[in-house]
Image (cartoon, rainbow, N blue to C red):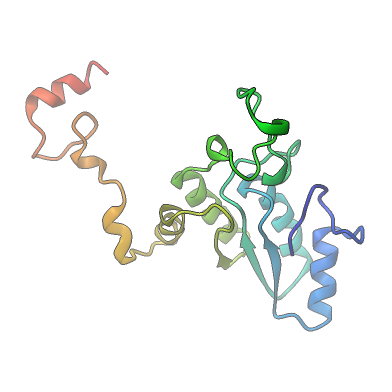
Length: 172
């Protein structure tokens, strides 16, 4: 189920009431897909998890939505005056993209409340999916592309970093 502008269905049901009806009608998995980002989806997921006994799915968009702008279709960029009609959807969402750490935190919080069917919807990049897997303690083959900060010239602690660079890092 996708929640659009208001935190309810077009029929006027809350997400948790809609999911409960779906479960009562025989659904094995209910949940939310698309539209809200992680921070605006989590409160709805908490209510859904309390309302149903079946599996719950969560696939937010990887964008920083808010209570004022609940979905990525409604985001506005106050720092950019050249956007057509002031809206960022669908071609100017870049400044609202969640980073890998935000997606990992969403994953951990979702699992903590009992959500076990996880993904990311429109706008997801490979590092988002990989961050979800790593947040769950998994190490997929693509983890070799995850940042290894131990080898960073200024922030790393690996033996391969010269003492000269380590000294520079204390001045940053």
